[in-house]
Image (cartoon, rainbow, N blue to C red; front, side, top):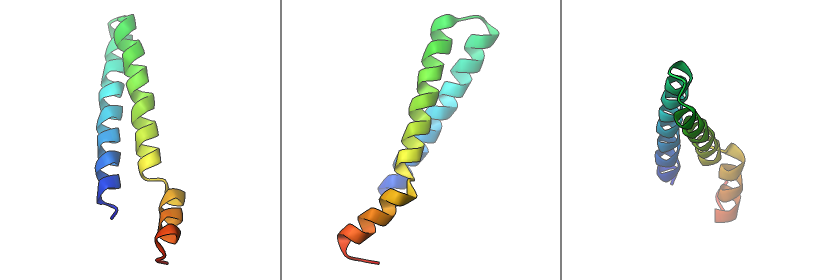
Length: 68
């Protein structure tokens, strides 16, 4: 049951890593668009990771399913 969440969380980590690369690259070579999109990817990746592995959501879904 937790496998889809793990897949989504790992995709979020890869988005975060790509955003980190583009952010650093944009800062080093003074590329404003690359920096801006890298920052957006950082934010999206972090939010995806946190939402996918939110322990409160897992606890609520277990109560909803009837298991403890």
